[in-house]
Image (cartoon, rainbow, N blue to C red; front, top):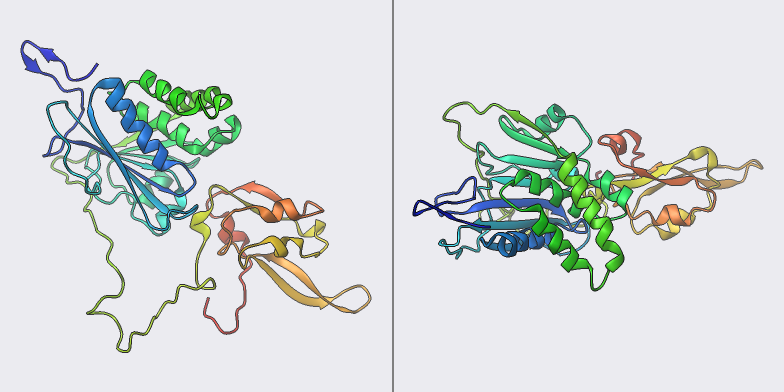
Length: 344
């Protein structure tokens, strides 16, 4: 397949192209969900399966689990060379692997007026649209995490299936071949589960289109700027927001799960606090049955919880269990820490 000819005129299979002749996709994720690998596999399927020209690269900071990641994919017809390696600022498609990114990142920045946003979520279209501030365009949703949990795979394969449904010029069979090639040598037992995950993502993605008014422009792209520079830095070089653990919000690092606390089962042994890498557990002083002073666990400060679930594994009485996170659960059940010398 690929760009063919009809009556001597070269036909393109790309549904849209920008002024440079590119069809562009941007994936918004956090480290650990496989967006980088998904971008590579998506580009590979377009190049090897359809003969398109393609490019993939990623952008990340500390390259660690839980930190923001962007993956970029460009396609063009065979007669158009891709010589641009700059980040994609005007995407035709945006894939959002993690809902918590809404808090800190404008994931639809620069989106084409007729663009498509794919979101890994279980919520209703209008609710997601409101949080994204998406006035018009097409919104696609898929429960990629639920599929991954059931098939014992990762979110990225389910998202790839949904992306192939969106990019209907791509050949799903080419992606299945890439999946086989990626896993068959090192992880042959993961080939079939990932194929099922891909097929479910392809079949289960849902769409809702919000009418685009005539003449509407796409989203403005806003390039993030540092808060402090040579013109805005306070005199004396004072750091107004030190990068310490107390002020940090780790909720965006969670990959869909968090610990649920069952106070009635807790024996206050502090096994959870011993293995916790952050300040998640909140303790209060009280008296035991004999009147002796003792520390009692009052709850979890989910601001610091990155969903590692080490506490669930350590708890000897199942007072902590794994829970799939719903939007708003952490805010509703959070017990805030009380640090005397730090504003929270």
